[in-house]
Image (cartoon, rainbow, N blue to C red; front, side, top):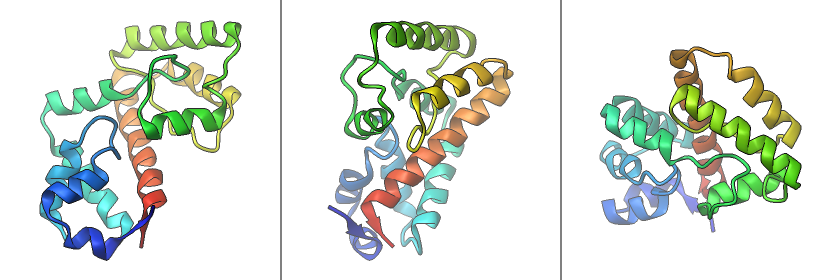
Length: 166
């Protein structure tokens, strides 16, 4: 069910956090803190404010947010949004060989960068995801952290657009 931006702007902190607390993977603190920046003129303004909260957060919060994202192609129980997004790419129905490939790439990535590979997968294919994992494995740690945060922004933007009527 979609909600209007004006309705979000009228909500108390608990209701607002309840509506938007899952936009950032297992990180309701983003919605809780951005509530103080109401009212929002557009979904884009809300997204920008949410990302400002993330980027201004403590290192522990940012690292926690990065680590809250599941490996792509994992068989663990995923949150609602992640499950839908991975299903749309076919990552929920990998062959044993594909699963092994994703598992190895995910582990190699985590070993190199210290957090899971994060990609806004909506509209992509399994091949696109594998290509991105391979290409980004050559990034520096600093560049990859910036890219991961940009991907989180894209993911959050898509999720907000799905649930909010501007």
